[in-house]
Every structure is written in C-alpha cells, then in structure tokens.
Amino acid sequence: MKAWWQNLAASERRLVMIGMGLIGLTVLWLFLWKPLAAHHELLQLDLADAQAAHTEMQSQRGEVLALRGTSPGAAPASNGSLHTAVIAALKQFQLDGAGTTSDEKDKKTVNLKLEAKPFDTLAKFLALMETQQAANTTSMSLKPADKPGTVDAQITLQR
Image (cartoon, rainbow, N blue to C red; front, side):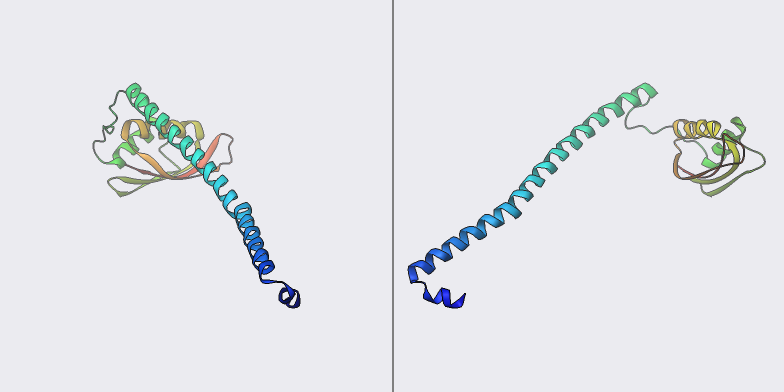
C-alpha cells in the first residue's frame, strides 16, 4: 500500500485524499448524523404527545374536582389524627377485630396489617380513606388468604 501511495503523482494523491475525505463524511452522515436526527424527531413527537396528554389530564382533573365539589386548590378536610379516622372506618366496614392491627407512626401515617379480610370491602375502605380523609396509600402488599375473595394486607396510609 505504501509503495502504491509513493508511486502516485501529487495530483493523484490529492484526488485520493479528497475522495477519502468525502467517503468519510458520507459514512459519518449515513451512520451517525442521520440516525441521530431520526431519533431526535421521534423524541420530539413523543414530547408533543406527552404534553398533549398532560394538558388533557389537567383539564380532566379540574372536571373531577368539580364533580367532587371541591376546588382544584383545596384539599379534602382532614380533622383529627389519621389513626382515629382509620379506626372509625375499619369499624364502619367491619374490618376491625381479630386479624387487624394498626400502628400510628405519627399523626399523618398509619400502618395496617389485615389478615383474611374481604378484598372488595378493603377496596371500599381505601376509597373512603382517600376521598373523605385525604389519606393516600403509600405502600401496600396483598396476598391471597385461604378463603376465596379474602386477602392478607399490609398497608401504609399517609395524609
């Protein structure tokens, strides 16, 4: 290869160098720039879709809050300690008694351990806690119990 290069005239060397440069630039454009540009365009489309979804969700959030009867900036009423509200709701849904333990970490956090409780009733209990007490489930572990339709649950509620 070195001997071939040495045998070329100066103008031929210059022509080969220009050709190699053009081939190099073409390879860079074909295998680097073009895929990156296509990926950038896809990301721009994804961003536009995400922004449209965010806008739609914000408008639906306002509608949901209006249907609930609250304003978007207002939080649901949360009087007293969360533990007291949890105990009352457990009694209301008959989830208290044997197999139920509750531990108050602080005034805004309660850990629950429920054994062999009906899943449907537990779901209604959690919905009530969220809508009326502004208590969200921050962690939950569910396992099927021996009886069909019942679960063993470990739940953390927080205001």
